[in-house]
Image 1 (cartoon, rainbow, N blue to C red):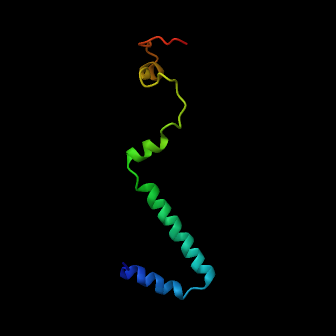
Image 2: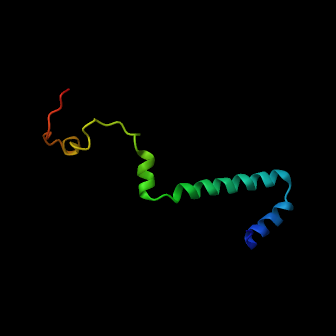
Image 3: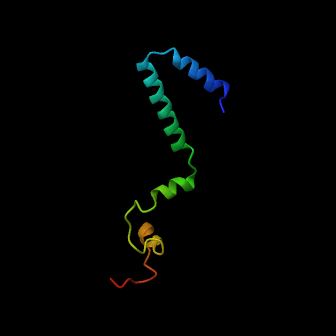
Length: 78
């Protein structure tokens, strides 16, 4: 399916020298990558970060201890 915009872009591309066509291709590729990176929602961002942060094994159950210094709820066997 060709939209009028795509048709017009292709027509204009035919009139450009090869080096400028290459620059246009790089520009379009960059725009597409930026769009894909910014079109993620918050869950996608969090999912991409999963497993990338080193933390203690009991982080989820003892987060108050690590964030605020409160006593741990459970003692570990280490």
